[in-house]
Length: 301
Image 1 (cartoon, one colour):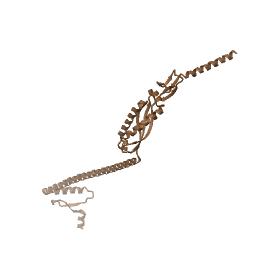
Image 2: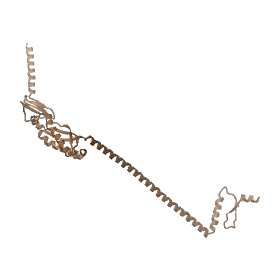
Image 3: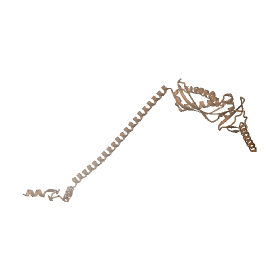
């Protein structure tokens, strides 16, 4: 009997502890990282938000709304009119986050974060896109880097000034894509094709000019070589003429020169293995061979 009573006592204690834990958990609230909790009691929003982490004790009657205060990106596409009355489609990205200190005011005045973006951010962004588009003279000017930078800066400043009092902090507005009207795209493509054709023609002209310059350089080099060859031949001709003149002068001024040349010729003949016997007139002033010995024998017969 005592054992049964002891078991009942343990069960009672366990149930009591469990109830205490369950009740105690109602006084504890954990807010996930990067988020803020806003408490409401009977429809009244509590003025202070609860940051990430564990909060003890809290009123167990609170109803909680969790705001994600981390960085987010909103994507928007809109047709933007320029001064030439053409509609250009712009795709932009808005980088923003919820101001955690204003989470209670946001809940009370607008609702949850999605409602805040829908009510405040999107309408203002579209309005600014139309206003800033009208500052662009021509639709194709949106492809100019300086125009894009000016547009992004104006959109960022405009959204920051407007959304800050509503609890949205804007860090940047970026242009993701630009889609011009189809006929403008076709005109730009034709212009690019013409520019590419001009560049090809310019490259071809440059190639021809380079080849002509090379031909001129080769012709000039050939002309210079011909001039040098002609000069060399003139020098050789002048040297030969001078040599002949000197020989003629030597012959005219010195009769013994012929005899000397005759002896030199005879000396050269005598060295030839195929040479035969020649007769010379020693008393002649020019002792040249008179006849071949074989011819002389033939005459004797």
